[in-house]
Length: 253
Ligand SMILES: Cc1ncc(C[n+]2csc(CCOP(=O)(O)OP(=O)(O)O)c2C)c(N)n1
Ligand code: SF4
Image (cartoon, rainbow, N blue to C red; front, side, top):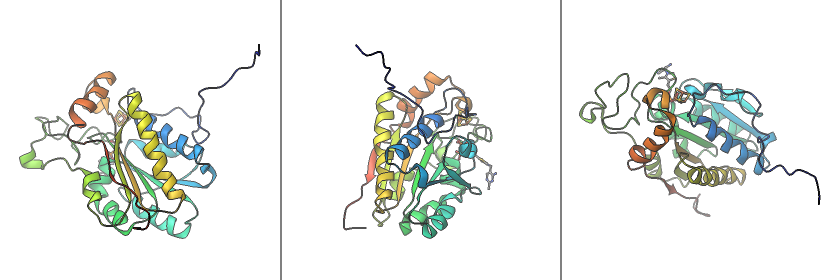
């Protein structure tokens, strides 16, 4: 009988050993790991560049062993466009929260997607502005209490939450647009498959791709981490259905 040990679980090479600053129960870190695993498995760690956003993931460059550029508020898709056009051989991705992408940078993401820029966006939808203290975001749920909607989001005053994946999927340019979640192990596994597919399509020089991931913010939702994952399932998922909204079709790009 052999005494050798087999490693069945280890840190992805694309992830650094730094301890993240994320709050307990925040799923930003889970999504980081999925991105890193995907880059490792596709063999593109050495040729990948991320674009960091504003928001809680502003320090994402500390957590990966790949190069990053920092973009001003909401402008990550514009920075990614410039970089990818100059270096189409590189794997380029933006990593953006809902405040960064659906509010401040709404124009940037819509036009980059419409142009079919061949980078990947990881869109982390936690229904709130996390970093700045929990203000209402375009994705905040109807009735959800935030620091700027202490009585709950009033849709008559603030409009209904914006479904970014559905909105972007109306654009003609063929691309890959999906919404996933990481609130249970099964959902983590499925998110991995979808994020890896988005990067694989980019590696094959196919199309613009965006994966929206429903995420938690226990701190600003004001609920414990376990309840936060349940809230994603009970309150967010019915309004934000998990699906592939647009799939790449060969020959239509
Ligand atoms: C033009 C502009 N609008 C807003 C802000 C403030 N700001 C910086 S980060 C941030 C929150 C971003 O939240 P989100 O993108 O949802 O990411 P999270 O922190 O939730 O991960 C806000 C509102 C700003 N600095 N400049
Ligand atoms: S404030 Fe919210 S989004 Fe930011 S790290 Fe904490 S739990 Fe995560």
